[in-house]
Image (cartoon, rainbow, N blue to C red):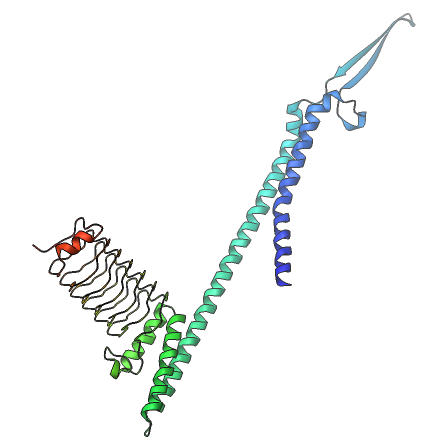
Length: 342
C-alpha cells in the first residue's frame, strides 16, 4: 500500500510540474497558427480575423436631382504581426510570470520541507544516540556493582566481562564521534581498559570492528591485538601507544592518524591509507605495508625490520632514524622526496 501511494504521489507531482509548460506550449502553437493562416482563411466577421471591407456611397445632386451616385469599397487588411504581439504581449507576460512564480514557490516549499525533514532526522538520531549512551552507562554501572560483590567467582566474572565487551562494541558501532569518545573516556576513568589484557575488564582483543567509523576517536592506550579493522575509518584518530599487534588493517583509512609508539608488529596494512600519518618510534616489525599509501607520513625512528613495502608509495615520507633498508626502498613503488638517513 505504501509503495502504491508513493507512486501515486510521484505521478501527481510530475503531472503538476509539466501541466503549466504544456498549456503554455499549446497556447503558443495556437497563436502561431492564427498569425500564419489568419489572413488566408475566410473568417466570420465576428471573429475579428481576416480583412475588413467598408462600403461607402456618395451622391451628387443638382437642383435636387440625383445626377451621380458613386459606390466605393475599401478593404482594410487584417491584423498585422505587431498588432497581435501588442494584443498578446501583456497577458503572455503575466502568464509567464505567474507560471515562473508558481514553480519557484513550489521549489522553495520543497527545499524548506527537505530541510525540515533533515533537521527532524538529525534530532531523532541525536536522541537515539543519547539513549544508547545512557543505557550503556546504566548497564555498565550494574555490572560493576555486581563485580564488586564478594563471592564472585572467576566463571561469573568472565561472563560479566563478555557481556561488557559485547555491549561496548555494540555501542561503539552505533554512536557518533563525540559520544564514542565519552564512552571510551568513561572506560579509562573507571580503569576498565588497559594495554594489559589481564587487567582489562573490557577487552578489545580480536574484536570485529571491520568497516566501523572510528574517525577522530581517542583510542590511546587501548589494546586491539589481532582485531579485525578492515576498511575501518580511523582518520585523525589518536592511537598513541595503542596495541595493534597482528591486527588486520587492510584498506583501513589512517590518514592523519597519530600512531606514535604504537605497537604494530605483524599487522596487516595492505593498501592502507596512511597519508600524513604520524608513526614516530612505532613498532612495525614484520608488518605488511604492501601497496600502502605513506605519502608525507612521519616514520622517524620507526622500527621497520622485515616490513613488506612491495609497491608502497613513500613519496615525501620522513624516514630519518628508521631502520628502513635499501632493499625495502627498491621494492617500493616510489619514494620521491623521501627524507632518508644520511
